Image 1: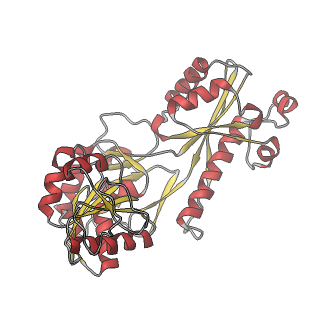
Image 2 (image 1 turned 90 degrees about the horizontal axis):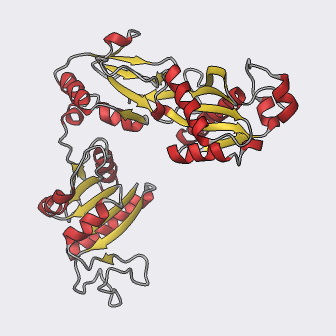
Length: 384
């Protein structure tokens, strides 16, 4: 996380340095600021009054503007803000900036002696509660957590969504689920077959195979808006493989993709990107569609595509042109497989209770001058 730490007194500056050192040790990108402008043992003589950092990069940056103005700018630049001092300063400073619990940064308060760490904004989605626990452990301080599900040790659907890269599609339903769990009412979870979960289910959660009865649906499909349950949409899970005639217009590619995902009820937000053979790497129409949707476009050599295992829709004509009998199916699977490999590496999940594989979901479909297929990057969900 990118974190800004601000303090207001000499003692606060000392604590500020301890906090930023601890955050950096945990791998965060932390920056120190102080609103104390007069000279002190923690602010060297060559520290400028303009808000620019002194020559020594270990010194705190002096905030030259009002704290409210600094907060307004920092609110949009950092993932988390840590105020070292009175909670009232933080509350007054952030009040005009607070907009949405799903997008606001985490905000924490630490007292000058470093005894207490208090998350006051975005405890769940923004990660303030988790950051408070981590920072408290490093400082040997006490985390003061006030959110109901946390203090009761119960499942929080918004935290679960963030940790598993799931889009929370309905905050009203999410609140109802949290309220039900706090009342010790069991909530049923439906998980699409492309996904599975590791570990034990939290208290008051159960698994159901009936999507109509589910309170929580974890699914990449485009679901009906009148579904009972809360849909948690796996972000960036589906790779679409594409082949097309040279010079195919972006408008026709876009139309083909929209028809394809509607026909197969794939939620557009679940699409990770497009994949093809390397000879299409500079295909302008594909690049324009990817740019419009902020999708990556990955390509593979014919050799890599030929090496991909699976049962594919072969075409002698395609093979004669590009050296491989199928582009869209093979490319989609290659991209999905690479995503899984990268996520395993990042998460350190080398030993899994069940296989974690890419799966060809939709075989090649032929449209005028365009072929499309879809593959899913199977995902392991973590409830704890």
